[in-house]
Length: 222
Image (cartoon, rainbow, N blue to C red; front, side, top):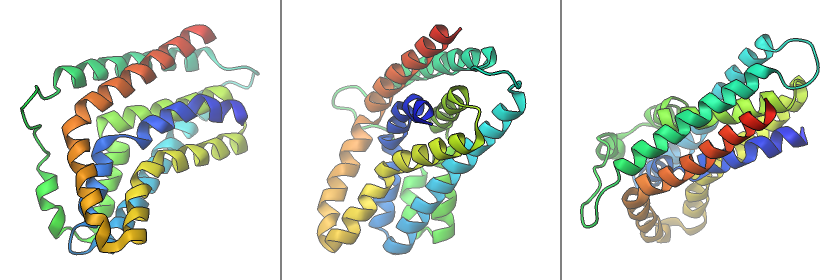
């Protein structure tokens, strides 16, 4: 299980510091139903990542033959996912806002104040498991786990660690809010503004590093 955790941990860190989900939970925490929406978003985030990761592991298990050692397909999948991450990094870098230009914000941000806990949960699932950037990262993490071990118990243990680490970024604002109450508003607002402004650059660097790692690991395992 150690190898599976080691292979997937850098990718989990990439999910952890994805800016948009952090911005979303911060907006939840300054909405009219702050506590309920914040916890619902965190729960939806965990469920979305865990469900997607489990599906990947199930598919990988069905495709893995009985012989020992990582299958060739796992290395090929790593290379393909790595290339996709590199392409996405290039797209993020090309789309970054120029100096002095405010970045365009998604439409859903303006509607968050009226969200119910159910909508908060749904948005978290979408951002965690359906949004293309996060979907690629979570699939890459689960694929790394599947390639490192074929034991179901070890895979599930490594996936649990992956989900916990990947959720720290979303959980941190909730903890800050609970610890500081109303005093957290200024800090969270500054965090939100910085994350929105630097979202493209942060994601481009993350995707570049993780994509290069995935391609390198895949080539080395062939």
